[in-house]
Structure formats: structure tokens, C-alpha cells
Length: 417
Image 1 (tube, rainbow, N blue to C red):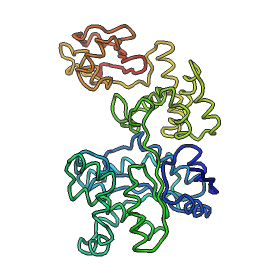
Image 2: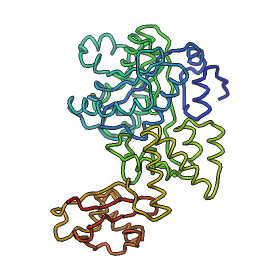
Image 3: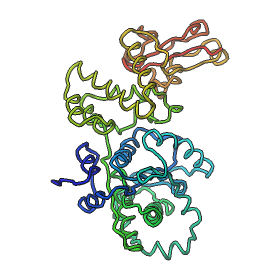
Image 4: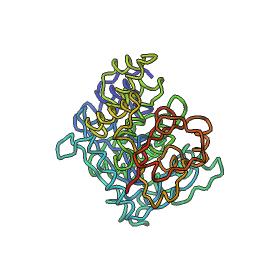
């Protein structure tokens, strides 16, 4: 598509690679020529922290604010009670209202790192859709809102169709999710003048539903914009690693492990990730991404530093880099490595090295830990670890020991008493 945008926001989205699709490029571009326009992204509270997979859309909200507009972070206190079925093979486990509230409280801290909240025209606001969803009258909702939805059309959306084509059950509860999300857009437009919903490309059907509903009920012109669903160049889903989800909350994933995730980016992804996850000039991102050989490693350090600074602060990024250099270049232990603390009671007469590798997060299972040892991928204090039957007693842990999986993943194991 050849389109030359007028608004700063659309220009940045296109230039940096954030754009997958838009319901009306020209209409949205014209609307964003007026400063202070509100846009939202919704976040269901299914966990205590967001993860790296959410970071692309958080950066979109950040750019939206930097170009003079008003971001809305909509917490799904209501919709989480239903669960988004989009492209899932099974139903999400239902959470209690207390668990949802706890998750929202825990998630909130991350947004303040990326957005400025307040009362100004371009200050962000945080809302909770439980405010209007919790007290809906079912019969009134069916009559006033449900009549605008065609079941035939809802069944044609790829997120639903893919589930039905595989003959996997889709509950009536989940089927209602897209109606509730559409209603969110209507309410945000009615209450706050919100003109734009953004999300990953898997949300396209839900976004279009909200636009249609708002046009039918209020006769207002609003827009949808989606970002690509990112996978790494080696095919992995963005935000996943061998150790599980890469959380954004420091109490769920240390800043060092977060930094290390970005430092381990594959060569082919460096330029693209610099454009999406940092605010460095595009030409500099492209220059760094084109480096080869050992030089690309310095570009990866820049990427890790920039992304960690945004999420955890400059001091955490500097500490993580210093720890990494100590571990990799000098063979040291590093004070900031993930640490597994064991009590004497846990160790008893001895604890197996396989169990220690699993508990330190370097392998998901005993089978994976044994395979790591068998393939010469494990090291104990930088010495090859070849015996899967090795036991560590309290004496062996009198001082901390370093366990390594491959060249890039490390953990400390220490005695806690």
C-alpha cells in the first residue's frame, strides 16, 4: 500500500513497522491532525504481570502520546470474567473477582513507566470496563445491543471460525466476549470521545464489531488499527523463551533476565526490534541491524540497554550489563544473576543436580535437564557437567555455585541458612 500520511502518529507507525491494518487510513490520518484525540487498548487481567508480547502495543500507546494524543489503558475487570476466545484452542480458566482485582493492581505499575498519566489533554487515563459491564441488565443489553449483531457474521470471523473448523468447543460465555469488547468501544466513545481502538491483528474482528456497533447506535465515525503478531525470525512467539513468559514486572522476572532476553535476540531481528521497542532514530536502527559478525553483539547490547531502561530504569539496565560482562567476559559470578536459595532441610543428605537445574529455571523438567547434561550444554562453576546423577550436599554449597545452560543462561545456587 502506498499512502503518504499527514499525521505524525501514522507516519511513525508506518515507518517503524507497527502497522498491520487499519479500517480507514485516510479518515484516521485526517482525524489525528487534531491534537488530543483519545485511543485505547484493552488488557485483560489474566495474570499478575503483562509480558513482552504486550510491549509492542504499549509502545504504540507511548508514541500516540508523544505525538500529542491521549492514550487510554482499559483494564478488563469485566471482560476477564468471560475470557477472550480469539485463536485459542480451549476455554480460559475463570478467575474470581478478587483474583482479577489483584492482577489489575499488580499490572498497573508497568504502564506508568511508558505513559504519563494526569488531567492534561494528552495525559493518559486508566479505566476499568467493570465500571459499565458489571451492572448491565441482561434483557436490556440483549434488546439494545444484541440486536445489532449478526450471528452469521460473528461465525465468519477467523478467530471463531478456526476454533469451529477444528471441531473444538466454543462456549456461549466465550461467544459473548466479542459483543462485550464491542460495547467497550461504544462506551469509551460515548463517555470520552475515544475515536480509535488499537490491538494485535488477532483482535481485528473484535475491533470491527465495535466500530459497527458505535456507528449503528451513535452514528459516530471511529477507527481501528492493528499491529502485526510478532514472531522471532526463528519462528518463536514473541515474548516466550525456554524459561516461560518474559514478564514485565520486576518481581516476576529480574531486570537481569529481562535484559538477557533482549541480548539474546537473533541477528536477523536486531534492526526490526530496535525500531519497534526503542525510540532510537530509524536510520540508526537500520545501521545497527545491518552489522555483522562480532559487531552485531554490540548492537544487541544497545537493544537490551534501551528496552530495559524503558521498562526498569537506567540503573537496572547498567547493572544488568555489568553483570553480563562479568559473567561472560571475566568468568565471574555476577551479583545480579537469578538466584536459587536452598535451606539445609531441603538439601538433606543431598539434592540432585537435575532438580537444582529445574528449580533454578534453566530447564522446564527433569527430562530436559538430563538432555542438557547429555548434550554437554550444562556447566557447574564453568566446568562441564557430565554426570546427571550428581548430588550436591550442604558442604558443596558453602559458597554460591554458578550453574549454566549453554553460554548465555546462568543462575546462582546458594545455601540460605
